[in-house]
Image (cartoon, rainbow, N blue to C red; front, side, top):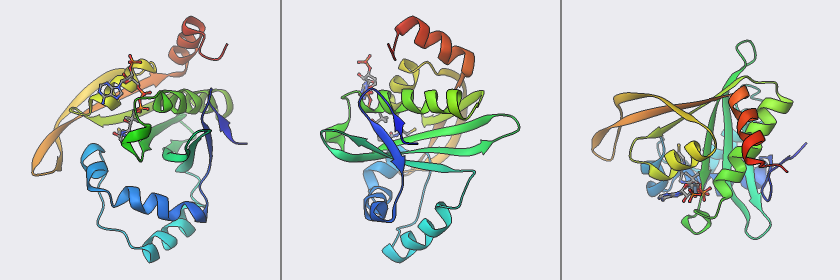
Length: 184
Ligand SMILES: CC(C)(COP(=O)(O)OP(=O)(O)OC[C@H]1O[C@@H](n2cnc3c(N)ncnc32)[C@H](O)[C@@H]1OP(=O)(O)O)[C@@H](O)C(=O)NCCC(=O)NCCS
């Protein structure tokens, strides 16, 4: 089942998406915005990674598509813990031209509906660099609460950065959509 937002669709990653994903992972500007890190990735490495990614049940990756621009980014539900019913949510929109148009919000709302209504998860966690205002604003708009700050936890671009940990519980999501009528 594809995951639908108001406008976005999240679908499974496919082998044809590997070049798109490789470009994103090799983009220095993206690397500076996000928490993870990587060495440069070749197409051979990317193909090998794909073979392991499609059988990885603990980490589910989706391509975000919009009707106007097609493939615009990826969403990851990582470290899905079926006992404690938690997962870590991560989003990347590849091109700055598609940002600030509500795509991140809609994709995050869609993933929450999927996580809580379909996967029966109870909590989602998201982490962002303290200076990533776009990520913080989007997560707060989507109902996440800031739960903590891990100081000097991430080293990149020549200095240490604070990591903000955010989270949303299932009941908070339900209360939010009751109030903001997102899906009505
Ligand atoms: C973070 C990201 C997913 C946000 O998605 P987006 O589609 O640009 O965000 P939205 O358009 O849904 O905006 C959500 C809110 O954040 C605000 N916002 C978004 N980008 C902003 C920016 N650069 N500066 C200030 N506010 C910003 C919007 O104004 C909106 O709030 P509002 O409705 O009150 O005006 C996107 O910027 C992105 O992919 N960035 C690069 C990768 C990244 O940082 N990923 C997150 C790592 S944890």
